[in-house]
Amino acid sequence: MKCCHGNYPNCRHKDKRVVKQSHTNILERSRPRVSILDYTPEEVKSFLKKKLLSKKIRAAYLFGSFVTHASRTWSDIDILIIQESELPFIERPRNFADLLELGIPVDILVYTPNEIKQMEKDRSGFWKGIKKNRIKLI
Image (cartoon, rainbow, N blue to C red; front, side, top):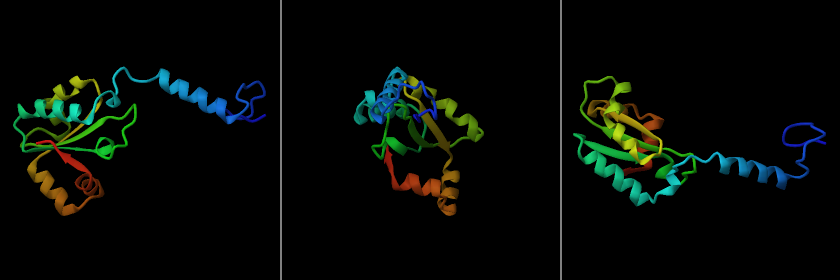
């Protein structure tokens, strides 16, 4: 008899309902302690705004699954911050470590105003996607 694991004769998954139920139980047991689904969108935005107002930034935008209302249990928060900086791109998010205090994974992208201008010129798919689906925080 074939099952979700291949051709295992001793498998207890006799029908798709059992397979689906067992996979659902595994996902529920492996749920993170804190999920984006534990907060309302207003709570997330309020927390982030409060943290960002103390920083010298030009603008901040939310994008990704949070904005498109496609967040799942394991989803993170995607945030794009525009700030003057001499630091290398990879080091800039360290200045925003306090955004992680909510307990949810946060993907922090920090660009300089000049880098944003260059992305506008290049019209990359990444930048087009952000421009199409974003929420301005600051």
